[in-house]
Length: 431
Image 1: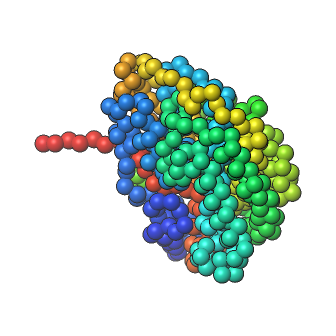
Image 2: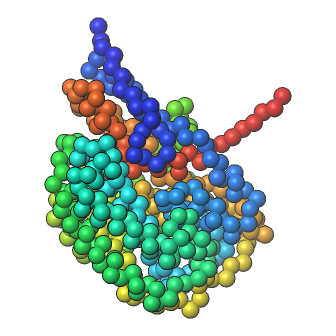
Image 3: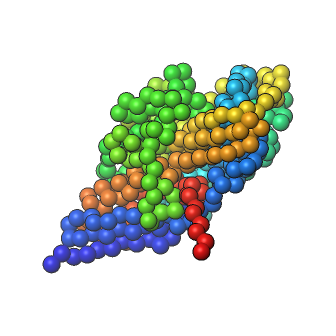
């Protein structure tokens, strides 16, 4: 008689949002894996319908308190495309600078406070701080520097208010930007030191054959711009996103699942994908640190994603230093916008991967249709595939250890669950 074994986690810890895990095995085979996302739908697309196009950045910023800039940037790009507007290079650099701040604060929070406790055997970052006070102090300072960068350029750390379609309400002065330099230089050195520590962790021997998807850019490690690229050879403009991905609803999740339309395979977004497809465009120090950490050309072990995120923190500090040193206040804080009818597309690299936006405007600039896809929504099938593969290879582990490893496998992706759940259709029938 085959033995049924069930692993359940009713409320995942150390992730943003609310989710659960269910794994069932029959004998020596994994029979069912579900990453249950039960966070209530948030209907942000519906909120946007009927609003003026200039309101989109402020509304979409409220989707996430950790990565609001990603939503503001994607919405702004789409509106600017509809209106036929191109930003001045100085404004693009300022956008890239605040996005570096978001990568630093978001990645920093995840690496040190949410993910590292798994590797060191602690239930949370507070407990970890008792034995590693210097590490946690440095981690908090790293995040604080990211917050300071966002506050300077964006007006405040959470849901920045200084960003707008066409640029900014106010551009910081050269002296204000230069004042960040000392902390950014410290952050780069602290990141290198932290990566040395993380590289010495023990990682499960586990790899997956991912279909990596990210933005790709010929001249820079992608944050704001690029074409859609993949490890199987996809090379397409952002406008083709809806053709490349197919979304379906699964009964156990309030967020849609995405698969690649041509193969039906799940896609893996985020740091490992960016690294695999753009490694040769890392900044020099970040590239050297990746080499020193033993990451090679491609990382397929999801548990080592903590190393890739740390490399990206170092990259963001190094890139921010470059932008700060070259900064000159733009001649105007924003480009003038005249609305027109049409459909626009935007996609940037949020800390967790591609954040996609599509909006249709009428001639008065009123939003008539909106679609936003958070990266965690796309990553759900990859997370479930990881869980299936890991459990199948480690059925010998006791339930407690297997449950812990499964939770850790989910946290490998730094899932932003509440971001993913806003995307759901609602049909009401009244008799």
